Structures are given as C-alpha cells and as structure tokens.
Length: 298
Image 1 (cartoon, rainbow, N blue to C red):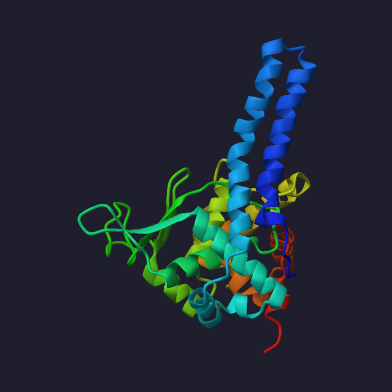
Image 2: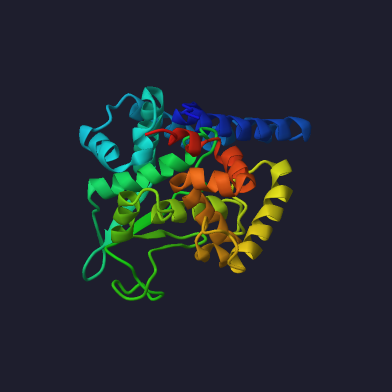
C-alpha cells in the first residue's frame, strides 16, 4: 500500500491545536479568574509555537527539491524504494528529508567529540525510517534522538572493534549503529538482517514508555491480541520450532522479537506471510503496508 499523507505539515499543527483547545476548555469550564482568561492567549501561543515552527519547516522542505545524489543512493541501494510507484517515491523522499532535518546523525571523533557522517550513510538510515512509517502518515517518531554511527561493531563499553554489538537503543538516549552492518544490511536486502530497521523498531517500541514489544500508535483493541501473539512466538522461537522465519535472537525477549519480526516483515515478507500469516497480518495492520505484495514479481 503506497500512501502519501499529512505528515508533511498537518500532524504537528493538529497536535498543537488539540492541546490549545484543551487549555481553553479548562479555563472556560473551571470558572477561572479574569487573569486566567488573559493568560490563555499567551499559553496557547507557547503551546502552538514549537509545532507551528515544525509545520512551517516541513512546508519549506516540501518545496525543496530532493537532492539527486540522495536519489541515486535510494535507487542503487534501497530495494524497497525501487518498488514504489511515482507517488510513493515522492512521499518516501519527503520522509527522508524530514528525518534528516529533524534527527541528528554523527560519528564519534578520534580523541573525543563528534564527526560528520557521509551523506550516503545518513540517507540509508533515513530510508530505514521512511520504510517503517511509509504507510503511517499519522504517526510521528516518538522522540528526537541522536543517532551515533560507529565504524563497526562495539562492546558494552562502546569500544569500537570489540564485541559483537551492531546496534543499540537506550530508553531515553541515543541510537547506536554500526556503519559496516548498516551497509551490509542494505547490500543483502532479503536476509532478514537490517540493523537500522531493527534499532528504529526499538524506538517505536520505546514510544509507549517501555520496550515490551508493543509499539507506539498501536490501536487499543489490538493490544491484547498483540501481547498474546508475541508471547506465543517468543516461546516458539525459544523452542527452536519457528521454521527459520525469525532468527534465534528474537527469543531474547518481547522487544527483540518485535524488532526481529520487523526485519523479517520488510526483508523476507513473502516467507513470513507464508509461514506465519497471523504475525504477518498483525504487522501489516500496524504498518499499513503489504511488502509481500510490493515485492511480488521480478
């Protein structure tokens, strides 16, 4: 499903408007003193200002041409983008621009401090984010986080070249991604391993306040079935009876099962749909996408 929606500038403005209406309603219904009525315009302005600035910024981005060099990276290295129709590509490109404008991506510098990251790496990270929310123009990234690109894997002490950690997300802190694994994930686009998809799936998971396999924006009525399916698949993966759709790492906990399932949903959608139609359908409903149909055919 290829959807272009209101994320461009309506989402932040709508959010701000709802908040301001709540403020006004509270003052009016609380039989507030005169000073409160005078304070309402100021309060509304303060509430609206950040979201309206974001909306204005996105409106400007919408009018800015997408860089040819970025498009070349998408065409050459992002199989998902290549399957979209013209409208889908324009929506995807806009989401890439928004993500790169609103998120901070850098590398650790030798001797401390930060260093810039090459545009092709930045575009691949943003493309992962665009893939995840392509069908959900109503959904915003839960928080603005620093994204730190390490040259290769690292360990728990963040020592580069030591250990086997390809990515990490802190509850309220940065996202860490191995550049080497990021590049490999897009080079092998159908092996079910993509560190950026995996770590950004964790960001969606943390959007509810904790990493429990229940991502932000999940419909309330879907929460109970989702918990049941995740718990069941967790047991199945741990018993080594999952027929190799989800890799073993999914058995770590509910959060990792969700992140690994997201990787499979976007990288091995046909296999996931054939072997676990229930899990595929839940992910399809949440992301409002059908990548198995997108990748059908040559």
